[in-house]
Image (tube, rainbow, N blue to C red):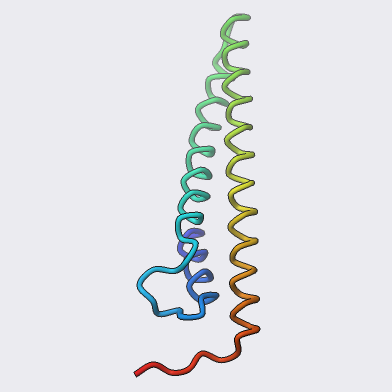
Length: 103
C-alpha cells in the first residue's frame, strides 16, 4: 500500500499525470526495494542475534545487525532523494499553471 500511494502521488505531481509511466519511477522502485530488503534482513539479523549462544555466534550476529543498519541507511537516503525529486516535480507543476486539456 505505501508504494501504491507513492506512485499515485508521483503521478499526480507529473505535468502529464496520464502518461504511461511517471517520471522518477526508478528511484521509487529503488527506495521500495531497499526498504523491503532492509526490513527482511533486519528481521533475520535480529532473530540470529537472539538465537546466538556463544561469543563467536554473538560476534557474527552483531555483524549482521550492523549490516542491517547499513541497509536501513541506504533505504533512508533513497527515500530522501525520492521525496526531494517528488517535491521538485510538484513545485514545477505548480509553477507551470494548469495543464491544457488533451483530446
